[in-house]
Amino acid sequence: EPEVTQTPSHQVTQMGQEVILRCVPISNHLYFYWYRQILGQKVEFLVSFYNNEISEKSEIFDDQFSVERPDGSNFTLKIRSTKLEDSAMYFCASSEAPTSTDTQYFGPGTRLTVL
Amino acid sequence: GIQVEQSPPDLILQEGANSTLRCNFSDSVNNLQWFHQNPWGQLINLFYIPSGTKQNGRLSATTVATERYSLLYISSSQTTDSGVYFCAVGKPANAGGTSYGKLTFGQGTILTVHP
Image (cartoon, rainbow over all chains, first blue to last red; front, side):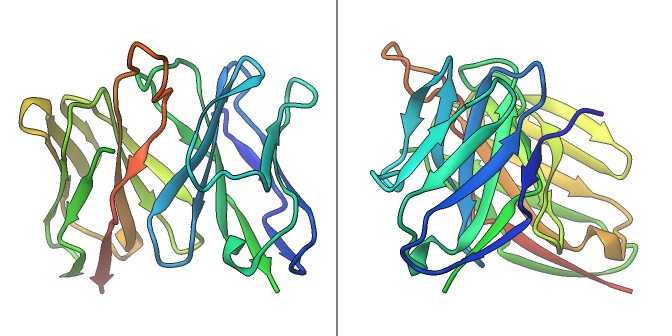
C-alpha cells in the first residue's frame, strides 16, 4: 500500500539553525499538508499546499516557516531560525482530493529537538 | 474555528473489555477521521467516516453528522490497542476557497489496556 514517507525520523539542532524536513507524499496525491505536535499535546495544522502554492496556513506558520515542492516528488518544510519552542513532532500528510472530502494520509513524523 | 472535544480523556481497561470513545464537534463537517497514535508517535489511520457506520475487525465507528458527534468502538481490547486515539475533522471549503482540507484535531483519548 502506498504511504507517505518522511526524513529524517529524528533531527537535533541548535537554536538559531535552519532545518529542512523532507516528505515524499503518495504519488498520485495533489494536496499536501504539514502538522506539528508538541509533546503531550494535540496535533495542530500548520499549512496546506496545492498547485505549487500555499492554500491555507495557521497563525503558527509565520515568516520563519516556508514550504516547497522542489522536484515534483518531495515536499519540504523549512524552519529558518529554530527556537526552543519549535521542538515537536512534525507530520506531513497528503490527499488525492481537495476541500476536506478525502482521507488524509499521514507520514511517520520527524521528531525535531532544538537545543 | 471549529471545536473538537473528545471523551473520556483517559481510559484504563483490562484485556478483553469493550470501550466507546466519543468525539463531539461544534460545526458541520465533511471530513472526519479517527487515528491511533502508537507508542512510537505514528498516526495510524483507522477510519474516514464523515457520516454513517464502518467496521474494521474489532473496531467500528459511527458518525451522526446532524448531531455533530462520532463514536469509536473497540471490542475485545488487546494490549496493542494502547495509545492515544484522535478524532480530526475538516470543514467544507467556503466560497473564498479556504479550509482547503485542513484537519482540526481533538485532544485525544489515552487508552491503556492491561494484560
